[in-house]
Image (cartoon, rainbow, N blue to C red; front, side, top):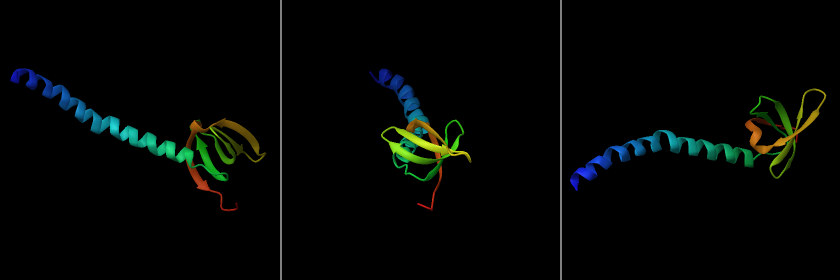
Length: 92
């Protein structure tokens, strides 16, 4: 019986180390990104995961519309494609 318990200690120890070094930090990062995407507001400057810089002009459920470039081209995309929020537009 003690030999069986001893043989389980190493795999459980490895799992615990992986959990605290890899799994838990990734879950925290995913939660933070999801919160950022859910708190988007019209007028914020964003960068998509594809590198497109734009300003949020419309938010509807899981779809957003952004305005890019000097000709104010409008792009509609999924909310999950937002990589970072750069700044809040102070003019609104």
